[in-house]
Length: 86
Image (spheres, rainbow, N blue to C red):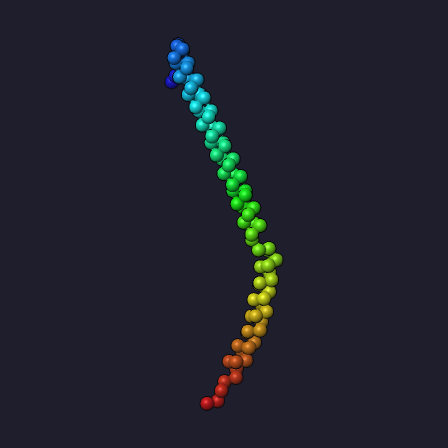
């Protein structure tokens, strides 16, 4: 409303300039807040990636589980097929 006013006096101009400066400061603060959040998120994701086990470790663990299953399944079958005669 103040910006659309056709006949502003010095007091109105002073108020309008203060509002404009406050709005610009608010926009700069918002941008700075977003930039800080982005930097923090990048640092956190880098730290998580650095502390995460390597991808090949998952394959090593999977291979170990598969060896265990291969050993277990025939043993289970042979245990079930051999029943004591009581």
